Image (cartoon, rainbow, N blue to C red; front, side):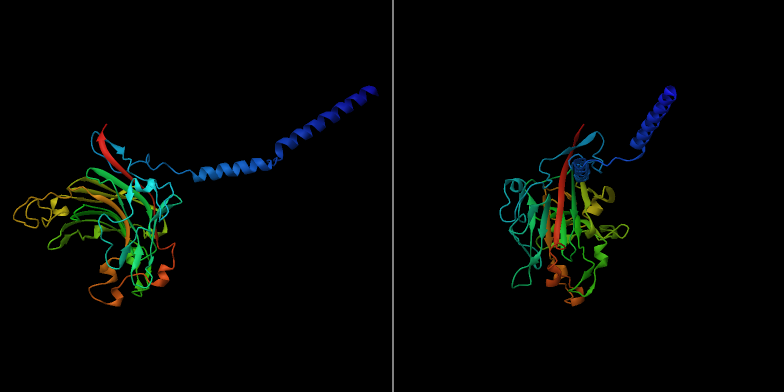
Length: 347
């Protein structure tokens, strides 16, 4: 009897142990509350990690035997610069105005009190100047000029507006210009009472050479100057826009890391001899220098006169924001996440 009791007791203990082991392996154990919070914070932190813009791959090839060198006047805008008191972090690299005393084209009126940096973004809003038909907005100019060979790229989100959003370069004498992001993002124009969808799907990438007196302007006008892809609405997201100014006769434009346009040679850069070193515009004497001058980097918003005051005078051709459109402050703010500049150097 005693032996039988011992056997049954051992069997009972075995079954109880087996049951407990099964329970611990098959039934999930809820994590403690602090473990859940720590896990959520870790996931959130991982989601917030953004790749360092200075170490991201440059889509352009610097050339044989060369590599890219990051330039310290690039800017990630990871600081605060209130509109009225921007501080050293901003002013060490930028002026909060155009590169001369001009206040802007057409109905534009640039103000130093408009651009600001917050939430890791350069922001340039637009609003009505009280009591006028003018658009009060902003323009900034980098304090370090660039010259070929140089690669410049920005990450930006354009406005939901008929206003021009521009990131571009211009020589100090206003005779040579490279536009690597020029956009008009709205779907509809209340002023023209017409669709604006042709523009909302296209990004303008081009260059100009000018004669100032008497004023003459050449820019290419082929279809390739208006880039579109997969019916993208450029205002809906951030995109990267870049240009490799390789030499006076060679430009490469990049959007979202893809080479989308190449312009090269004298007949594409300056077919009208406007960059002649002597007698600009004299086609019998070829002393063309191409896009050879130092340039300022400019980021701005404009109400351009060819749109707000068209030559036809017709309302159907007039694109300028209405008060109702301007009341959408979020939609009328150009946002730039970063701008980076590289020079090719020997390996």
